[in-house]
Image 1: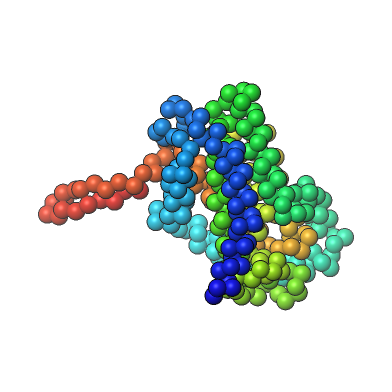
Image 2: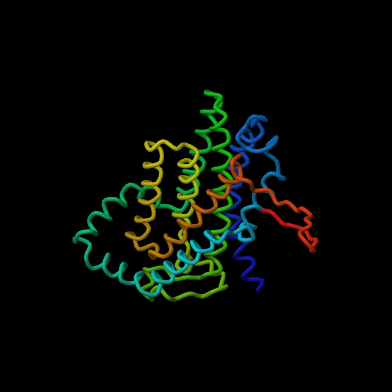
Length: 293
């Protein structure tokens, strides 16, 4: 047990702490500059309480799940199970044996868009740092309040997604495709420090979708949304084509990144009520407390 905890600590310290440093470096200025007229509710100031509240909001989201979201979760779970037990191995075998066949040629060409990003684990952090720093620099030049908020949301979504994905990788203990042992091999709670046993979910995919979703939702123009999601999809395809992940790995990773970013975007949307409230009520012969969230 002590070995498992130490391995998990080493894994998170190398990557999560690095991301947190960039997060504090480039988003402190952003959040602290947001004015009372910002899209964010209330007098939003960046501090540890803000991060803590957003963290709690994201990770308590299952308590606020609606029937519609519950149905989506069931659908996503069904798709994931179908991929693991039926399609993962078929897609892997097809890409390995029919590399010169259509549509494998199309997928291979499409994956080239995200190949540079997916070629190294550190490129995830380089892209994150590059986006945050460029937004911070643009804010200083243009004094654009929306850039401030976008850089802050991007920073939080990235760090939260990194934490979730990294933790799930260690918990699931799924073998990667190049191990050639099949897609159903999981060693749950093994906390392996070997890359070959940290396949699900795909961190490249989850972090890319987290960042691109923030950008696409903050700026609704098609000339921004289409390139953003195209890049995210190309990274997902690249991870499959290069035999680094099963199809279900990138599917789950994409859902995680998109969902966390979407939650944060909705949290600071003035048209969406997210506050948890308790209100007493009297109805006919009953007295009670109504919980609204």
